[in-house]
Structures are given as structure tokens and as C-alpha cells.
Image 1 (tube, one colour):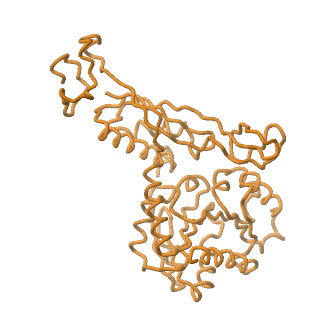
Image 2 (tube, one colour; image 1 turned 30 degrees about the horizontal axis):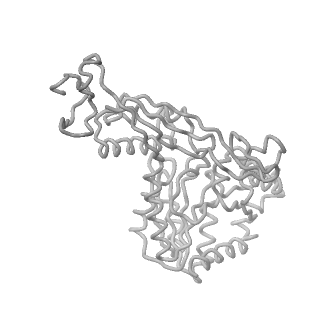
Image 3 (cartoon, chains in turn orange, red; image 1 turned 90 degrees about the horizontal axis):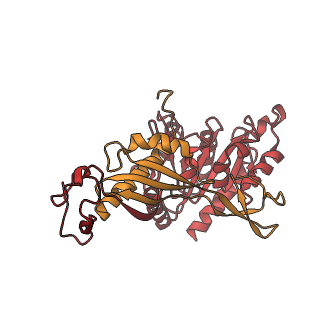
Length: 120
Length: 257
């Protein structure tokens, strides 16, 4: 393993992404992908920069070769049991920004989801 | 290439002009430059983990049919996962069927340590991979004797980052943190401690010699996962192991019921 390619699960996630794109190309009958919009939540176990770094390499030789990956950042949302209100958090382990409680129930922000693709 | 408008330079596969869904708008022939492809937007809502999730769901079904309580053990390298497993399988093998899947980048050393206890083990080498995935775990089951009404341990690659996001079909992720590491690990690697249902604080026999606060580690773990359970033990001295075995026995009883 060279220092320039550390092991990272974003490579696997990119492979999952490109496999999904190839399945979509088969079922929806398109031949080339020009752009992909991917929603990534702030609480997802993925680093957007590492996705961008890996995407071009993984897409090579596939229907997605040369396409642009656009990442849509989705904020983390949780329900504060103490305030009885939804709050925004940026990572697991953040306290409620209003009351400081850690009794939070996640509502949104763990997704890694393809939203739309530009194809021909 | 499209023979009507000649725009299809980017298209190399078959191209059915009689298809109702054909995307070229021939009502506006040559409205676009010949060298620019006509594109369209396709709205899809698909999780990029969908493939791993399909395998994980299949594993979970397989485990449920055999009433297996399945644990995905995660930690940083050197926390004592394998030593804990060796002790655990030795203690439980007489009372229930036990099997182990070992994950490491290289070597079969950990599986050999388990096999030395007489318990079935299969080693997955992930090569350059930093985590186990559900597909590899499904295939590992082909190499283990079929067991029922027992426990299957999956020891993940020593890594507190990548395995957090990969469901293997387990009942619980169990994170092992040792007292020679920092008690702030739950805050530094929140995704893993959020994903785990049980935190084991291992190497409790070293507590008199290190500046590790069990109370702080538990507080930090509950910050990232309010519902997490915590057990303090030493695989080396045996202190606290009975509570861990009881936790496992309760899980096996639940899935066997």
C-alpha cells in the first residue's frame, strides 16, 4: 500500500455508487452519464473530499467515466428530548445548541443517496 | 450515431428510434450543436450502500433462520479483541455452539489463535480493504460448519473509522476500547461509538498504572450514543468477564426464543 493511496472506505462507497449508476444505465437505457448529484448527510460515515478524490478513478471505464460528481451537503438534524424541538448538529456527540443536552434522537443527516443524474 | 440528427457522437450502444422513450426531441431538429450531446435529468433516490445492505439483509435472514446471535466486534488495532475472543469462546464453547469469522488485511494468525481453542474459525483477508463487508461475510459462512442456537463472532479489521458504516447483518456492533488508549476515543471516533450498542473497556487490570478514567469514557460514549451500554473487564485477568458472558447468553436466549 503506497502512502498516496491510504485504505479508505470511500473507495468502496464509490464502487457502490458507480455500480448503482451502471444498474440505472441498464434499466433506464442510457449510455453516458455527465453528472451525478449525491446527497451526503453531515452524520454519514463518509468524507465528501475522499469521495471526490476516488470517484474519477472508480468511474474510469464505466458509463460514468468523465462525469462530474456534485455533492449536496445535508445538515444533521436531531430531536432534543429536553427542548422538545428539532435542532441542527454537525456530528455525532454534539450537544443540543440550545440547552447543552446530549439526549438527542437523530432525525436526518445520515444519508448517502443519489438524487439525480444527467445522462444521454 | 443518430442518423436523423447526427448528434449522437457520445452514444456507442444500441439506439432504438422506435422507442417511445427515445430521448431526442426531433421536433426541434438541430436545435443543439452537433458536438454537444442531448442530455436529460433522471431523478433517482438510491442509497449508495444499497448493495451492501442487500447482502446484509440476506445474512440477517440466514442468521435468524439458524437462531444465531451475531456480534460484530470493532476496535482500533491492539485493543485486545482477539484475546477477549479466545477467552470468550473457551468459556462458552461447552454450553453453546460458537463460531468465529476473523477479518484482517493480511495473515491467518487470528483465526489460528481461535482454532487452537477447538472452535471453528474462518479468516477473511481484506487485502487493501479497511473493513469487512456483508458480501465477504456471507461467503465466509460457506466455510464454517453449520451451527444453530449459538453465537457467531465477527472480528472486524482493527479500525475505528471504516467498519462503522458497513452493516454485516449482525445483531449488535460491540466496540472494544482498552485502558491504554485515550478515554476520549468516543469523541474522536463518534461514528463508531454511535453505531455500537455495547462498549467494552478492556485491560481493566492496567487501570492502576494508566491515566484512563472509566467514568469519562462512559460519559463521552453516552454523548455520542445515549443508549450505549458499557462493561469494564480484563481479558487477561478475567475480571468482569462473567458480565460479558451473561450479556451474550441473554442475546442467544433472545434469538433462540
